[in-house]
Image (cartoon, rainbow, N blue to C red; front, side, top):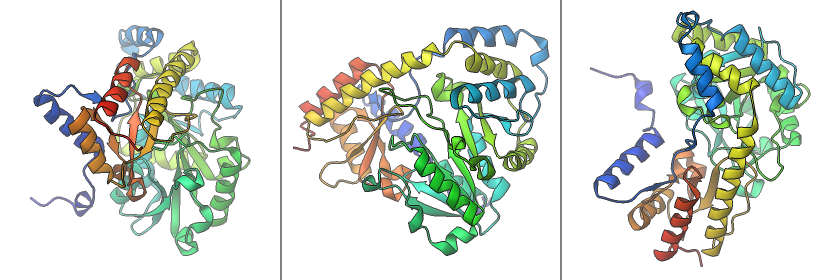
Length: 389
């Protein structure tokens, strides 16, 4: 049996490796504080759960759904985008339901990348940007996200010959893993660049609503001309604590949405209608849980950043996401530092190298445990003398 060459080029999925190490530590009796994976620890709001319960009982939800999503779900997305960002969308041509945004992100490469084409991807970045390119037999071209540039790619540093051969560019703000944010000025530069080189911009917008201290994230599509060159991927996972439900959507350029629909209609059969009905309830029902969650994450963020700064780090308060991106100790590799934390403190963090070469020297902390456990994590670091002083 010989597997496809494309499989041999794919590195082990980072979070699967973290799960393996976690299980090994648990077997040794270690009390694990898992700050590794960005999975909300709070439940899905009850009104969304009740809508699912009601919808599952309706036989009309039990057949195949439309490939692009039900008309009612797409209309709900359209209304949500209008209310939140002031953006007008055509629900029939510019909106598509996804089985979680990860699925759509992976499939967009099959719609646009031919063998030998380039995609422009951020590093550090969500691993699917690179693996999606490799699955399509394309070449990922790295856009470094450097701390001195506020973790924004320097578009002027992209090789012009590569830009001419590139089909896609991925950006992601608020950003995973760095928690960086972008403003409209940056998005305007991206639109200008994309028009110059005829590139489709894909904005991963999964953390749009996870913002703090009055900051509100801008949609890429708010910028003039953005819809001509780009689409935006969104997920209900983080906004509504619905990670396991697998529901998201893509919006924007109608040609790109159409191309994505061809891939999806040949690979999957859409999202269960009852889950789409629950998604409609999420998008159009009470939104107060978003602010409640943001207050929780703000409190958790402050505990961790205050604790780290006391131990010698110099971390500024993040404006968005439930991640904190911190440098390792004494120029240790990210894997060495993550292993040190696990062995000395029972704390799991995500090595930055898992997000690309430019993630080396950092680890990502996810604020997805109760504040008491975060306080305990800081105490464990102090007791183990893990400091930058």
